[in-house]
Amino acid sequence: MEFFKNNVLLIGLALGSGIMLLLPSLKRGAAGVPNVSATEAVGLINRNNALVLDVRNEAEFATGHIVDAKHIPLADLNERLKELKKYQSKLILVNCQGGVRSAKACEILRKAEFTQVHNLQGGINAWVEAKLPVVKG
Image 1 (cartoon, rainbow, N blue to C red):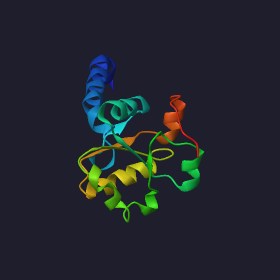
Image 2: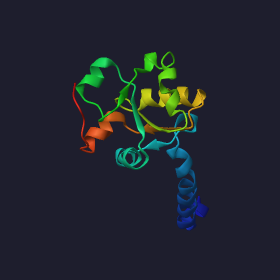
Image 3: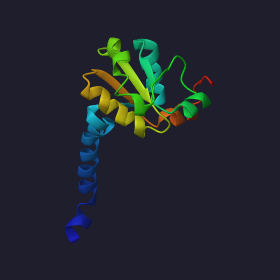
Image 4: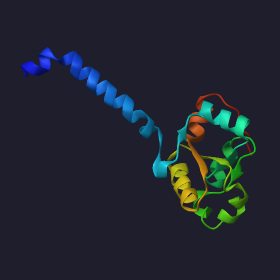
């Protein structure tokens, strides 16, 4: 116990260093897909012309979605993958309401060999919270 008291600064430094080393891997979500914040997503859409894929259900999508988002509910994604084939090597930003379903959709896309898939961390909730525009209807 005395060792910890005498070396609290060194122990704290070692723990902090370990956390900093792990942060890049924590930023990656399921299946090695990067999670991006709402502001990072705006950059991907504007600079890289990313396809926005919304995997929420019809009612959720109608309450508000990202401009020009392609809507394919998660339940239909496997059957509708062929609609996305032309985006297989292009950047795709996947979103849902809170980020859980979109993470599952990202796994499906990665297994289908889509190469540039990103998950909107926090989903449309984070997008709205960042006061970014949505289209209703």
